[in-house]
Image 1 (cartoon, rainbow, N blue to C red):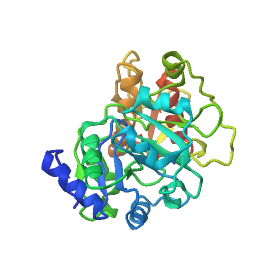
Image 2 (image 1 turned 90 degrees about the vertical axis):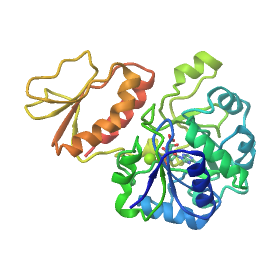
Image 3 (image 1 turned 30 degrees about the vertical axis):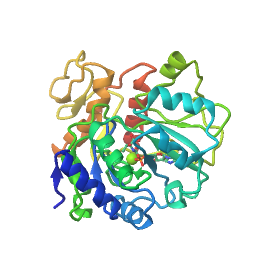
Length: 318
Ligand code: TXA
Ligand code: MG
């Protein structure tokens, strides 16, 4: 059984040594929990693909503890990407950049780009710093779930998501992820930035705070990224978006909406940020209750709501 450990100094040290020795570690981040491996250890990454049952050509994000480490992984970094990093790191933003020599094919899915971010979670940052002190350059970490399934947002859900495939890998318990959906991914390979995956850092925010316009469409259609997968983030329960919920259906909506008669209220988020935080929690809860259908009333808006609608619409595809 995979041990769940509190992020004490000694446990973080233990985890950093284990990573350097080639083990996988479950790590908390502010977005979702990740399954981490030394980004330069191809055997560890091979096991990571196996545990996640992930297609081999699907690229992985490298996590670093400080912006100084960016140059290890990326070259020819455009000015706008540096501005984005300065403004939003540590935070829920991943930048796709031209890869350096050490960024191997098993991280990039054979593409010539690498995705990098600094997560904003104290335990993740401590681990990344400790790992760097031991000589490590970066930690590869996809979300800690099987490919196509729901990302975990707490330590116990990592065990539920991957349990059978784990041996005795450590999972660091950093509490519930505060954001609850995966990072925004921005393609920085073109002259202008492009959104590859919506998240808590929004185009609107980037425009308002930095005056940088992010294209909502991707020009390079050969690029492989989760945004162009159809079905993803999917629970077992059927997600219903239209029509009226029926007796016995699960119901997820902002707290301003009353629960329709006979429905089972799964969560009552106060606002859109709360909605994102409890979205995957709600999917898992509906599955644990063995519900057949979960009726989701999508929040409207062009901020984080875009990311919420993206996840729910992909989860709803059968
Ligand atoms: O919030 C997050 O980003 C979480 C936490 C753990 O950091 N990680 C995460 O990883 O969501 P994952 O593997 O579940 O999703 C990362 C996505 C991949 O699906 C892939 O589409 C995209 O990032 N990606 C990674 N490298 C890329 C690259 N070189 N070019 C384009 N997309 C890339
Ligand atoms: Mg994922």
